[in-house]
Image (cartoon, rainbow, N blue to C red; front, side, top):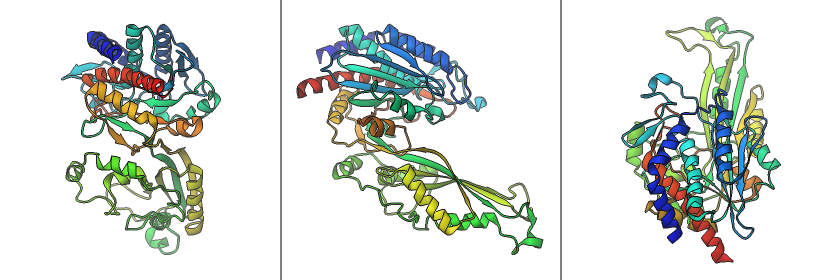
Length: 456
């Protein structure tokens, strides 16, 4: 702990400098969806890691490069993979920003800029943690691999192939991702999983053109009704998804996971008030966190067809499209779920075209992993608070590439404030959380190395 105290002191002494460098980093756009500045930021990170003494490369993909760097300390030390992404979301709509998105502005203890929380602030804190450890001790406490991709904000389309290709290079004991917000209560957290996701379209066609609803109503099929009946056959009014076999592989929470859920702060009335809801979705007996972590969902994202303008137009539409997504939980798979969906569509509406789109497998790391306690101790040392254990994120992250392809446990340790407004105008990061993130990054490597030493 004496070494760690010296690192914390170093971070405190360099707080102003670290914040200035962070602000400079945020000035560089790296918008993957628009192809703006991505390579320049990749070069910047590659140079920074090289100066830190890492063996660094810009590893090519079919899209933007992955910044891949490693520092080997000892064959007997654990190897920690630090993952993040250097690309950011488009900043539009620009008129809703209170200050330009790539002119970082500090107001009331927060820095406002695109990428402040997602994900530049969080992975930059990790890099400054590495720098601080080496400044104090001349070496890292364990082996570290840094992997920063440039396509996360467009769905990480090449990440899985990259992981498979570089499997030997990425030989690590565990992976830590610092991304996303802390719990709504403000408490730090460790997330040990993420739901998967599968997007698809249902396309129904009728006549070759839109028709007069009086002249052809009751004669020509209405594709909107076709889709409406199909969608109704997929989920009932009690909230249960009725696709045959849909729940076959869904795992109930373990006793340890149930214990973790019971400790998560929750104010249902506040949630409903914030969303202007009188009630939650069915099934009403299902627990709030159980819904978000342990149950799959079927969501209609949009239903399109016919006339939607002002007034009325007595038209019988010739086509209709439903855009949908399914969130998957461990141990569901994308391929199996799609096959069950396809069988359902073929049975209930064989004329409807099912179009498969993007997908991501679910991921889960057991709470009883030996690394959980070490990461928890490190967060408490850096932040002065015991973190919440969250069995799974409600959203989807590409963590399956680590748990299912590399076969290593994956942990998400978010540094950003709950109201970071990631993906929205006025994205921000509390500077206190940024500095504590640097300390947390240093502490996690310290405790993980200590734990490995104790086990030998």
